[in-house]
Image 1 (cartoon, rainbow, N blue to C red):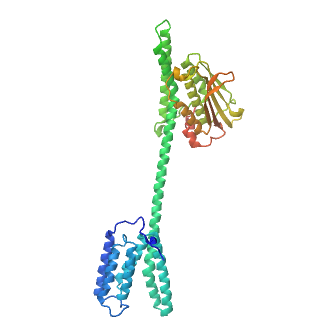
Image 2 (cartoon, rainbow, N blue to C red; image 1 turned 180 degrees about the vertical axis):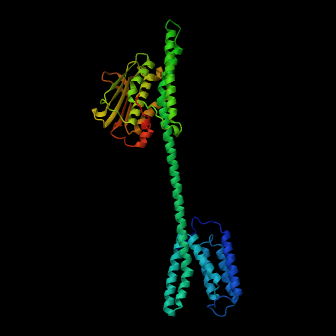
Image 3 (cartoon, helix red, strand yellow; image 1 turned 30 degrees about the vertical axis):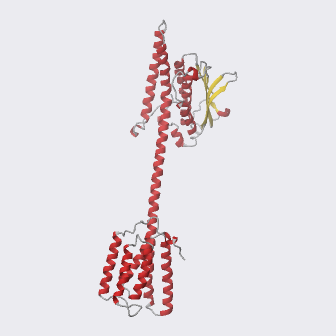
Length: 444
């Protein structure tokens, strides 16, 4: 016995009982055809004798009303249609009433709930099989084949057709949902790629310009603080010369970065990429910017002739650049050491490149003395992002040297397969870490 929940109206069905315009037309057409057949006396003999002929119009009227609500009134209109069809067979069947009943079965399978659809389909199959077996056993005539075909046409044809159309609609809805989900995932990937590209551009812009602007800020402050004296004019000229030099270099770096962001038509033009060969020039500029007793020493312990992979080399250069810039802004007078070597003492190319930068810490806390140039800590964030994109490791913070001196250390370990050893683990991450096309690479 089917419970009431099994016959509940599906969630997608309209809640209103307002008939659909097409259903009203179907009901009116069925009523008109039924009246025409009744007027021409084209109806079957009633199973119950002695009933007036006009009584066949009552099931027709009830079936037509049910047909007007074939979409919005399921499953209740199906019960009414079953009763009307039974009454029509007893009072003298009209073909129009039977056709409307087949349409009610089709609508119940197509517009009803999933459980109602399955129940109607399986019920029609069961009734067809039972009636066919009974007629074959009882009648024993050839005409029984026509009756079986008629029974199948009334019950099986509309229900199976409705089931096929319902399945096609469900499959189309699933494909639309899958397409919407695919479009949503593509949009999320696009936004993620845009965010990653913005972060890479911001990191590259900071690394390119920060050291030059720091030098300009330091020397402009020194120039403003100079007093009149025998050496005041000369010191001012030196400070202004450093400011001009760093301004020109900063503009050149900005032009190079903007050139990388131009349209795809200029993508084939070569672009200069900083390399570890340019560390000497970087430290020389740092010595010029510092000018207060600080020294910058490069200790390159890598195997001779070995070149890191392009993304590793660029990341190492940017880490040294940021660490040296921070040393110029915040370090105390003393040696600033830049050390390059393979981690764990390996001399083989397929190892890990270790970049270590140490600078002396000031005796006076920065909060009391104040920094030499403004900074927001974005450089440390950029260094950490570069290292993480290459799946390396980074540690920053104060350490104690063997002699007891307090140093600030930047220690980065980067995967270094070398140019002939293949790329690091994820090429997409290498692109985000700041790589450029191979044809645009040259040694500085």
